[in-house]
Amino acid sequence: MSDQNIIKKKPKGSTPKIRGKADIILCVDATGSMTPTREGLIKNLNQFIDNLVATNTKDQAPIDWRVKFFIYRDVDADKVAFKMDCPWIKDADELKQRIDTDYVVDGGGDAPESTLDAIYKSVTAGDWQQGRTKILIVFTDADTKELSSDPKNGVVLTAQEINANSVHVFLFAPETKIYKDLESKANNVIYTYEGIDFNAGLGELDWKEILEMAAKTISQYSVSIEK
Image 1: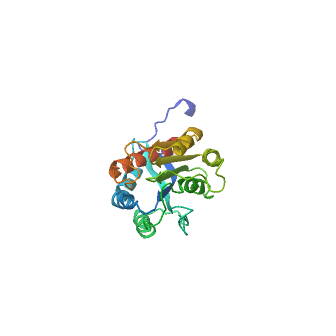
Image 2: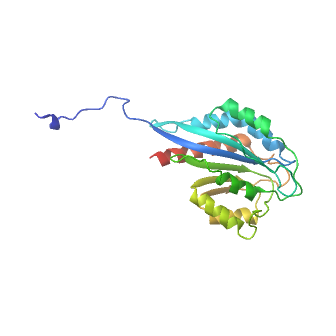
Image 3: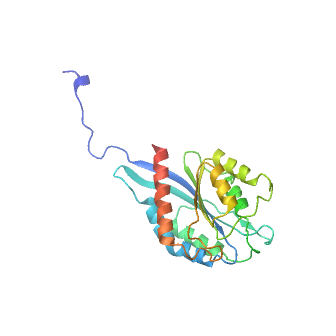
């Protein structure tokens, strides 16, 4: 019998597990009302990371994740409206320390804030890595101003950048026209607004549930791209 006619069984455990890869940017409103968001992120960050690397099937390996943490305020009211110099972080304790240090809740004028600018700047940051799922998570309790560099076409330009960079955007914000326009024009914007209060710093959110859902979705997206 020739070797070609012999069916050789693969030893158990020899099938390589699928290992997704994700670049994640957390971009949050840091104006004066956002203390509940700061507390919610810090308190539930370890659970977020645990859910991020949890496997859903026997063929899935924990995903390879990197995170940046950005904050923004109001470009018209704050001298330093954006802090987006964070390197990629791959350690949960380091990320928690970064949030604790950088997330200073202060400033901002009356709503709206500069969320559209923050989304545009985050998406075009320039060092997303090829072959990794690109995720942007945004939290704000306010409406957004138009894009400061192009108020007339800001939503269209931002949507174009989201699409061109293949970024999945999770936007947790109040129900407003500009956010809805962005959701309709961009391919991968998941916009959550039900139950979010404009003036509560997102204190009504169930942070444990929200971050658990986000982490599991990111994990699933990352693995599907690997396939």
